[in-house]
Length: 327
Ligand code: FAQ
Image (cartoon, rainbow, N blue to C red):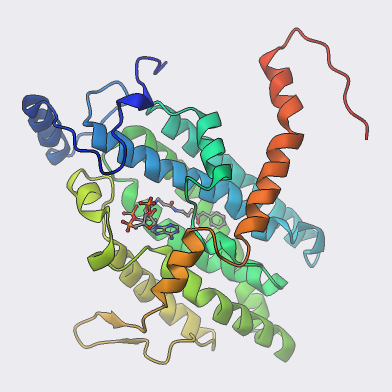
């Protein structure tokens, strides 16, 4: 359907390319009017490159993001929690599917994207490089990481690239169930036994810093925000989304009698939340492959790719006869 486009049209990072000024002006006027860009419309090479980078990273985050919670399916406390967690993990993989399809409309094949994930060329969200040590960690992930993702995705669903907007709208509907499921788990633990309260507080303490990093570096250090906001791919800056998160979720955390591991976190008279620097050096290490679980996450993904290859090959050759490996 989109076979007339090639990713080779996209410039490499840092490469300067002069676009046709008339086409560029028409494109920017269209974006200014709030119109959407479809895959077959003309677009600047840098717009295409940026979208591939961002949507691909988002897709990888969904499939790698299923892993920390996925490890708890067999250990979920009770049948209902197990069913709900299984459904959530399946949803995350489905989001990956939607997002890879959206990125493919820009001309990069899924195989190429997955190869770039495995080789470390392409990033995925920092948060999924930390372990889910206890059941309470899954509760915090499902409540607060899904909350952070919803803030980002509801905002960017209004963005200019139509296939990404459509995917985000669908994803947000499902994520809002995840958030309710996560909140229910956190409330259960926070209003439970002293041991359960202790577990959920410890989990919140562990996840706070990765969640602060989730929204990306401060605006003054963000490389891509200016370009992405100019073309309405990103509809709010990293700092604005972080502020939105404080505003919506810190009061809810406090309401449950839980605390946030940042003694400087407070809302100033001007309505702006003040917070401590969340160690941006750690953020850089984690997103560049040196977090607590980066190697484990990629090795699981590699194993999945290899062990599922026969299924994909079979699907590509519907007439061939295969014997299902039994061991
Ligand atoms: N993690 O110039 P900026 C989910 C990189 S989905 C890793 O500010 P930008 C669902 C950035 O790529 C979660 N890397 O970048 C779920 C760039 O490096 P590059 C994912 C990060 O693009 C829930 C460099 O730093 N969501 O959670 C991160 O303007 C529960 C400079 O940064 C999305 O991907 C980070 N947190 O803004 C699943 C949403 N932040 O590429 C399972 C779409 C920055 O030049 C369980 N993406 N970097 O090598 C976005 O909205 C944006 O890309 C940002 C970053 C806001 C993430």
